[in-house]
Every structure is written in C-alpha cells, then in structure tokens.
Length: 114
Image 1: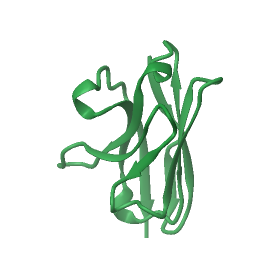
Image 2: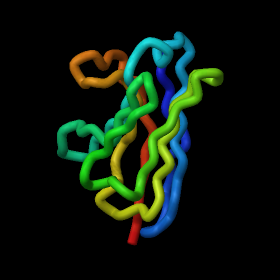
Image 3: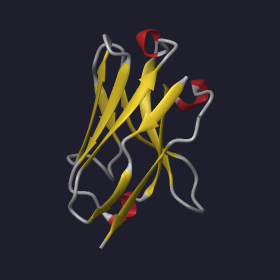
Image 4: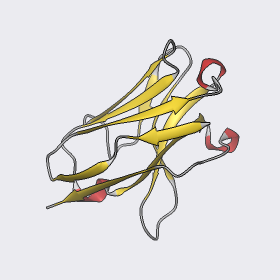
C-alpha cells in the first residue's frame, strides 16, 4: 500500500524528488518518514514528518533534503538536493517511528556517482 518512486542515477550535486503514494490512506492518521538502506548497512531514518506538519532530519541530510506531504493526494515527498555518493541507497517510506513501520515494499533506488 506504500509505493515509493522517483529514484534514479544522478551525478554528485544533482537532485531527485521521491514520491510515496498511499493507496490505503495510512498517511492521514500517522506520522510518516523516509528511510534508506545502503548495501551492507542497516536501514536508517532520513527524515520524518508529523501529522501536524513538523519535520525532523538526520544530520547527514539536514539542509539538503526536504520532506513534505499532500493529504489530498495521499502522497509524501522527499526533495533531495546536493546529492552525495553516500546518499546512494534504496529509499522507503513508511510510518514513523520505526516500531510502527509495516509492509516495506520494494523501495526506490537512488544512485549518486562522482
């Protein structure tokens, strides 16, 4: 029910906008987040957005990424600017906090090359 899209391959400094569609209206009653998992590493929180609109970012993406949500479209977004090779990972959207996350889906691959 949560489908992430918008990933791709970009060069260092490039931008991508990820989208997360929510066919079962999970967003309307939950805090949401974007997570990522790089090869050989644990899944980590990238950014989360509260039902009221407040946001938090991991230190590694603060100032470069922006999380947002559209309740009408049941869609969450992650605008990623000034991308770095260390941003390379599969990105997922899901509930926040992590303990409430379910049904991860396939995610969307982001690859940043130098």
